[in-house]
Length: 404
Image (cartoon, rainbow, N blue to C red; front, side, top):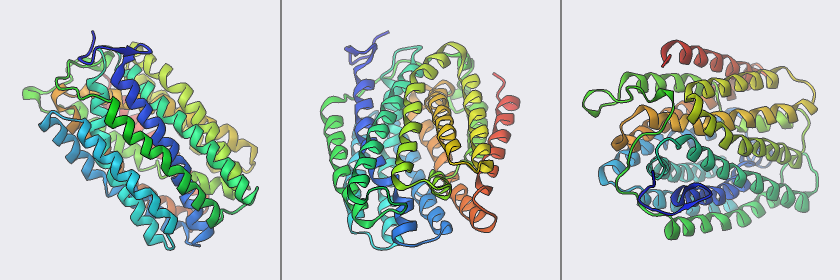
């Protein structure tokens, strides 16, 4: 079934493709600038892991309420694009101020404003992807979107590695000059993303139905209210996320195992490349086999990856573990968002995505704080043992409480 925008590109809605381009450009920018913020805090500003955990947790957690508000507002107004444009624009305006940051408080302020922008845009954008998708291809659409997002990360990290190498060669610690160059160059694709969204993405006024998958049965409670299955899924997501702290701790773990700044960027290139390659096949598979099975497979890989990061003492294994981490993201991230669309009424998708992203975002604050203190009090392996255990608990919850 065709959507109201008519034209299709690469077998997908025109809107889905251009929203993918927006995310591609945005992630080039974000990965160039924000990936090395933990090392900027540690190597340049000389703050400890509890503060790094707090900064990352605040960045992800405190803006999460906006995801509910913006999602609800997009449902109420029947307009997704304007809110998405506002959010992308706010994040773009915030990034250049990192050039002048001289304290962890300033960094936290910029990260907060950037995440406020993300909070405003994410739910309406995800709802717009769902609204723009044909019946039965939600998994494919979200897989494409996550794949484009992650290809942007691959390019952004590769460019960051090149810039850092040219500025400081293969030094073990990040320098202020290298970070400032990343901020200046990384702001350009963010501006281009806002332009693409404003010019090429069209509003979808009347969404037309839910996606496919075995989980479509009884997705809505009486009167269009969110039913028990969606609420249970949110609780399980919170449980999983409490062990899924900021990727800042993966960066610190890689440096702890002897990786240079350029080396860290390159292993993140490998991570994102695997993520991008796995996203579309995983989405298509979830359209055919059902979302729950695919999510369980992804979470299993996550648990194995974090366990490996806890016990490894060899630097070479980090390449393998980061590739597995990318496989987890490619399998689970887009499919989880498609699962949300399966579980809720069409007219309340924006609110549902807001609740989902709020659950994830608010859980990231305690998750990152816990990880920072576990690292500080016990050692670098402790946050990863904890994350692996929480993933196992969430898998049990998904198996027991969401059988169908």
